[in-house]
Image (cartoon, rainbow, N blue to C red):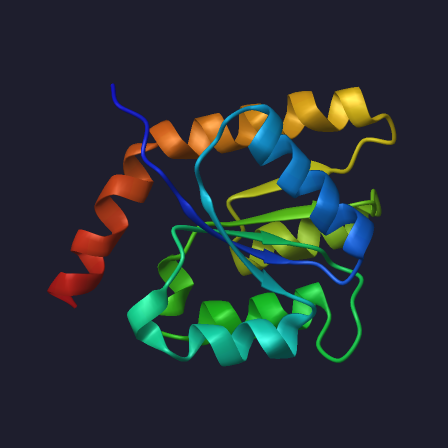
Length: 146
């Protein structure tokens, strides 16, 4: 099966984390388009222009203005945006955070590894999975039927 080039919205306030993801994309020769937002508020502004919806959202939980959980509640309440697969990418291993995120409707929860090599392995695997996932290929068609 052919891999899809993804449009990824990364919602992350830590510049080092943004640089790490960009390095993974470059190192692994993944040609995905990366859209950046520093917090949930900025991400919602981008997403309200429904002409440029991403294929996948990578979301940090601990951010200023609108944190990750509040962002998820707003996202999943929107009749169009709720279909965008959202994977939490965070340092929080708090069981309440994990439970709450899955109850809201996330597609995955990934802990950021401390070692860069582990980060590359995890993120490459995550992005490869979503670039092959049929959901990504079909959700735009679902939205068009609504």
